[in-house]
Length: 270
Image: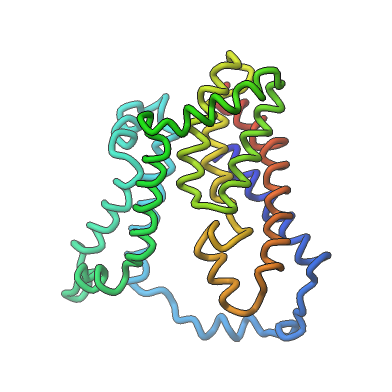
């Protein structure tokens, strides 16, 4: 987070500048919008909202805080590490089902499962994970073949060139395919390449940045369902999304290389 958050903030600022000075959308319809009047239409937060917000905050804390307790409270850090990233939301969901207000649970499990779960997205995620696992399976040999094909090309490359190549590859692939497949494939190939540099390229930082930049997927419909939804809204076209997406992809690569990697080296070096 110490290296990825600054990258995200800089990329967001760049995106806002593009909207302001390049795209320049028509803002006349909201120029005289009375935000105070809109705010008055929002009812005050009740006990139900406060309880749900508290549980959601607890989930976020369980996700983030243990990572900073590795030195001071290694037992807590190790516990959450062993449980995995799915543990906090499972705890939160269980609390929502167990805690009641006015005789009713905060979350009706039956209704939530039947109406509140986007099963198509879950099935897509499961499918891409299975595909990624198959592609990186040693018995299949795809990663070994790619590594053997790329290694001779990059064997004389500098550490900086190798780092830029891996970050750019992850960014480009995630904008035309699933981010989970991108992370699985690129990481499996990047690790031996980085390890071969004997520390010139920090393998841990590269893996973390691959996971980060694989989420910067906004150029084509296969990159992320939200892109397909945006194009399908008829408020924009595939060409417009592609142009802006490529521009942001280039910016994300540059910021990751110039800001994210150096910060990551400092953080993990500490």
